[in-house]
Amino acid sequence: MKKLKVGVIGLGEVAQIIHLPILESLSECYEIVAICDISPRLVQWAGSRYGVHQQYTDALELVKQSDLDAVFILNSNEYHTTCAIAAIKQKKHVFIEKPMTMTQQEADAIIEARDEYGVKVMVGYMRRYAPAFTQAAQDVRDMGRIQYAVIRGIIGMNHFFTNQTSTVHRFTDIPSEAAIERKTIHQRLMKQAIGEVPQEIYNAYSLLLGLGSHDISAMRELIGVPNRVVSAVQWQGGSCMAATFEYDGFYATYETGLDQNRRFDAHIEVFGSTKQLKIQYNTPYIRHLPTTLHVGETVGEAYEERVHRPTFKDPYTIEMEIFHESITQDKSLKTTPEDYKQDLTIFKMMVDQMLITYKPQ
Image 1 (tube, rainbow, N blue to C red):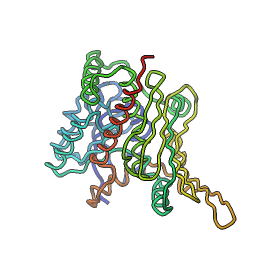
Image 2 (image 1 turned 60 degrees about the vertical axis):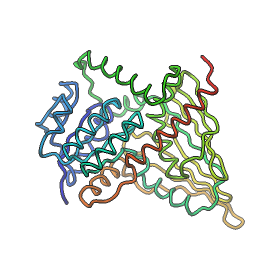
Image 3 (image 1 turned 30 degrees about the horizontal axis):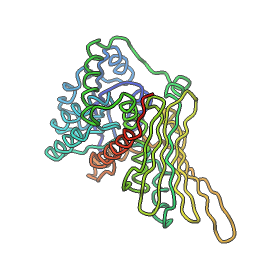
């Protein structure tokens, strides 16, 4: 098995809890040979912890390292495109955490660069690689006519889970100008994505890029792209929202929000005439909590309920195994930049409906 030499850009919470430990555990597939973060002390800590000697505070320098096969882009959304294109131009394969980009124009730029330089680009939609999800996707195709679907993602803040289960290293040596630069880029990209809108709508779009991108991406694979957004509303300053999607012959409802409750309530449920399927997710910040598939079905005169727990292997590990296979065996990917662009299209449709019903709060 070919071992890929990888560089990691962004060493924050998700990298510390998820990506770095998994890359280390998949030692037959990956070797971490370069790391980067704008916090020098965080780079030093991670370098010591994982035995990585090539350490950077400038991502554009990391991608030039000649022995790299792939780059994992885990830093702030605002810099995903710059880092991805820089890595692609150095002929490095790219794994990029969701949201891949904030705008359609950025997504197109990544696609253009990928095609020109002939590398793989994978978007980190790990929920879609959970075995319970892939089983549900097949079952939905086999169940016949869909009557209704519900997509739900209402969770407490991430630190509610990480504070009790993980040690996340954070340092205060980030240059002050970096925060100003990030804010400036963020505002520019938000306006490019959805125009001049009230702050609550910007907040809602940010929530869609973050938590919502998991929900909508999984929805698309299960039941397809909706014909239109019938309605969409936001409240609580854009931290809560609901929408109705129209499909051929049925509708789907979506609800999402952030609160102060220490629980993770995320699922997708699809209803047929005699069968319903429910994919139940748990927080990804505690590894190996299983994703389960719940089936309720009328068979003859009886009603049956079943719960499938295919594996304890977390979907992050599975998607990294698939990324490795895509490179070493030249296999196609399902979570591509083109796939991701469909989410941005749906987000914009939702924002347009939110503006119709918008009332200042």
